[in-house]
Each structure stands twice: as C-alpha cells, then as structure tokens.
Image (cartoon, rainbow, N blue to C red; front, side):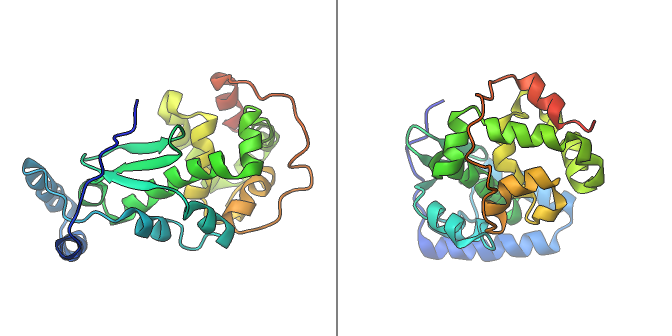
Length: 233
C-alpha cells in the first residue's frame, strides 16, 4: 500500500483549542457518552486535535534514552486525513499517522501508536538492529526461543504474549514484535532476561550484550515457528 502523500494542514490556534476540548471530554464523559460524541463528530469528519509530527515524536518517546530520541527526531512524521490507520513506510523512510487518532481513539492512544511506528523507524535506521533485520531477525528470534522456558516467571509479558500479541494472527510476526516490545514494556525487568538484554539499549540505554553482533544463520521467515517460540513452554 502506498503512503498517503498528502499531509493534513491545521491552523495552530484552533488546533490547540481543540486539544482543550478533547482533554476535557476524555476527563469528564463516561465511556458511553464519549463514544457517542465521537460518532457525532465523525458525521462532520471533525478532528478536534491533531498533534504535529515533531511534537508527537517528543511526547511518544518521553523517558526513552537520548540516543533513541535523537535518532527518531530525524524521522519525517506526517498526519493525514483519515479516522484511523497509518504506518511506517520504509520506501520513504517516513511515518504517516491518521489525523483522527486523538479524537477517535484518545490522547493516550496516539502516543502509543506513534511510539510503535517510531520503533519500526528505529529498526530500519539503527545500524545494529538494522543488521539483525537484514539477517531475518536471527538474533531476535534466537533470544525469543531462548526465553521460552522462562516466560511463566514474567507474568505481565506472558499475559501480553498469550492474551494480546498472539491473538493478532498473521500480524503477530517478528517485525511487529520488535516495535511492540519497547512500546509496551518501559521496564526491561518485566521481560525474560535474554529478551530484556536485546531491547534494553532502546528501553533504558543499557549497553548492548557482548554477543549482539555475533553472526547467526539467517532467521528465515517462518511465521508459525516464530509464534510457537513465543508461547510458554
């Protein structure tokens, strides 16, 4: 699917006023009333607030290591006219995120969505993680398999894998897993140690494991095998 290519233009003052309205609505309305408001707003294809790309990068990556934030600050991050959706397009090395995420999914969700897409950008642009991607994520697949017997000792990770990630079918692949881990686990101690060590440079700035760059055989592209390696032993 091609990137949208047409960025939504927003005037700054009405946009900021919309942020006040949206934040108030999220704070005071019951979930059912908020859902009703969103459906009425969509009748007019209304976006109350659309976070500009550079500001959204800053908000999404708050608390991440300086190296990660500096790398992602280079990412072209665009907003386009749609209620939901978006993604990272490697052909243009850019992110396009729907303008409706704040209004129709929430101010917290837009930061999570942006964070997820930014870690796709990291995977494509960080030389050491990109090298592993080029080998079919051989190192990542290896640490996932190594962690299988340890999963039950890390209940938050176990419950996320079995109750959320693996329920996504074909979307539960190694590419999405890479972006999901730092998005969903801001504390590496919640992860089995081999997985924690792999992602810790991105999560808390820890050094890379000494074996990180050791050559491994190509990881292949067997989705079923990857999903089996995620399930608790």
